[in-house]
Structure formats: C-alpha cells, structure tokens
Image (cartoon, rainbow, N blue to C red; front, top):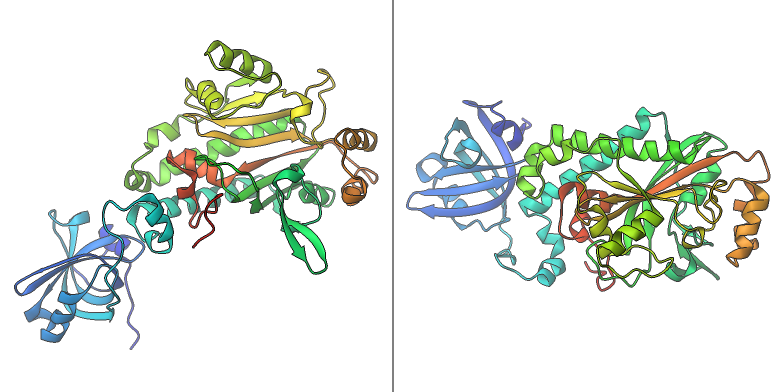
Length: 434
C-alpha cells in the first residue's frame, strides 16, 4: 500500500488537526530527555515539532530518534494536535518513526563567518532564512512572467554564446568556441530585437554575464536578466510599462506573502504596498545638481555610483526615474532625443534606500543611417553586427525596451544587505565555488 505523505504547511494551516498523518523531511533541531525525544522537522513547506515517546514507537525507533543529527532525514507518522507552546501552534505525537539517513554531524553552527557560509553555501541554503528568500525569489520571477503574459507578451529564448557585445568589450567573458573565440552574453537584448518583427511584444528571462571587477553589495558576475522588447513603443510607453511591472510585483508580494517577509525579517508588507505609480522623475542634469548640492563630488559627464544613488533616493519610498542621460554615456543602440541634441531617450530606474539601479531602458535606434553613424562614432565593426544592422534594412519600426536585473529587484523587494543572498549560488569577482 502506497503511503500518502502530508505537507507540514497543511498541518500548520489547521487542515489536518486531529488526524493521523505521515511526514518526511529533515531534522531541524533535536533533543531528548528520558523516554521522550523532541524533534523539530522541516520538509521545505514548514517546520513542526514532533514528540517521539519510547512506549509509542518502540525501543528501536526511539533509539534512532535519539541519535538523529540536525539534517538527518526521517519519516514519521502520528496524530496532529494543537499546542500553543509548540512552534507554529501544532505538534505531532509520533506513533511511528524511521531514520532514513543519519549522516554526519552538520558542519554549520551559530556565528560562522561569511566566507565559511559561502564555502558551504550548498548546505547553508537549507537554513530557514535562505529558504524563505529563495521562495520569495521564485514568486518574484513568477509574477514577472505573469505580468508580461497578462500583457500578451511572448517569451523568447536567446543564445548565451555570442560573437558580439551589447554593453562594450571590456566586460565580456571570452570562451574558446571550437576553433574560434566567442563570449558569454552580456545581454539578450539585441536578439530580442530580432523577434519583434515576428511578434511585436517579447521578453527574455535568461542569464547574463559581466566581467566587472566590482566588489560591491549589488554586483554579480552571473545574474538573471529580464529583457522585454516592444515594437511600436516610444520611451514614454516604455517607462509606463516598467512602472506597472514593478508595482505589480510589489503589490503581489505584499498581499500574498507576508509570512515569507516576516521570516526574512527585513521588509514590511506595508512598505511594498506603498509602491504605486506614478514614480518620481528627474533628469540627469537635475540629478547631477542635486548630488552636488548634497556635497558629493561629481565628475563632468560622469555616471552615478553608490553614494550618488543613495543621495538621490534617500527621500523616496518609491523607485526614481533618471532620464535624458548624455548620449556619450549610453550604449550605441540608444536613440537620440530629437528635441534635445546630445541626450538619449533613455531611463535608469533607481530603487530607494540606496539599493541602486534596477532597470536601464531606452528607445532603440531604428533608422539604418542613424545606426551606422553611431556605430562609426563608437568604433564598432559593422561586420561583427551585420545581422543587427540587417534588421534596419527590412521593415524597421520604432521600438524600445529595457533590462532588469532579477537579483537587484529581489534584493530591493526584500531589503537584503547583499545581492549574493538573492541568488542560490552567487558568482562574484572572488568566488566561483561551490
């Protein structure tokens, strides 16, 4: 007879009170006293206290329960009862117990160093907090997809290996590709532009790679990149879509996952509920004047760093759009504002509390002559981008798009201290293990 195992989450929701259940999972905490063992067991959906009495399970099973380590895997059966003293308000009185794998003593205890926890990340991911963060990340990604599908977007699969860069050659990861050299992609944007001529609304959700020598709390060498591209969208429509997307994710997280936010402990649902459009806006020039008035030194035609982003967003509860950057600061594919020469039709969306840039977006150059002119100015080889140039030769249309770093969004939504905790196994400048 096949045993049907219950989820701890269903027990904690009061769905199985007074019933006999079968559970399986891992020991979260354990202690024993006389003829009774107290095991707190987790199964990925929750944790619950289980009491194992010798006279209820037998001497052999009780001995196994008494020697179980933290993270030993177990199976048990028993009655569910309410108990306000127990974690979660429920307890299992075991009538059967099986030690599946004793294992070894778990190497992670309290007050371990950050480096040790990163070295043992493959084990530390089992912690309640990181588990909650990864669940929250999963929901953020689900809601991003839900948002775009509700707007009738199609998901597009780009190549990860490429011959050309999107954001400049200095941050490309080179790889040997048979007898040739290629690169890990910095962005799928250029390839998304291929598909808008087939279907006008597309998005990509895929890894991107940047060889940036940055040791900051918001940089990863490998991250997940959401990149929508929209035919017939101008920059104003583009920014509106960004605003709606961020609001959608924040409202869903606040409404549906207050429990996860409580476990993580760094963001209150009310803070996310306050994230509603319209978002404040500031031009690049006004932003430069603002940070200089705050006493920060800022180079002529420079880009904003952490200190500037912190100053710009300190007074905001919602993300802040910075618009109209100098064209020379932006990528070759960004369209010049016809009403402001030397300015790009673009935006950076900065998260509050100094979490930094979430999104970079722009109208794209769609006229062939203009693209060739910009490529010449940037000293880019037309040969390397011939396929991209071809898009402007055959039925080109006005279009725009943006790129969102998923981990940066998760970091801000959950108010995490470091971006490495927004991804299961982080890749940063000094770490490619485990």
